[in-house]
Amino acid sequence: MNEAALSAIAEKVELLIKRCEQLEADNAALRALQDDWQKERLQLIQKNDLARTKIEAMIGRLKALEQR
Image 1 (tube, rainbow, N blue to C red):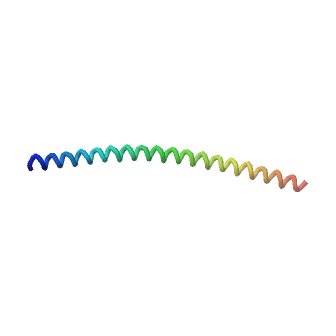
Image 2 (image 1 turned 180 degrees about the vertical axis):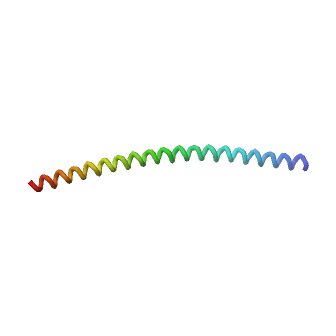
Image 3 (image 1 turned 90 degrees about the horizontal axis):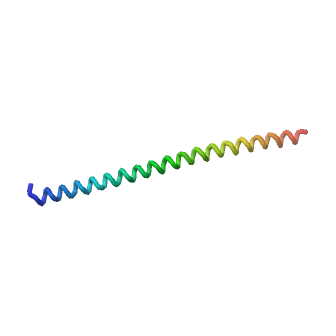
């Protein structure tokens, strides 16, 4: 192989390395976002369950008042 061909291959390898590094950084950022969304989702589910429980308790109290 001549010098120009080796240089072209070396440039392509460097470009691939840079792209892999960028993809790894992007992947890490996306994973962090995914973790944040999952935590937020769990919090919302818990709040929803708490609200449901409170509403069911209120309905039960209202029904009890109606029966008096």
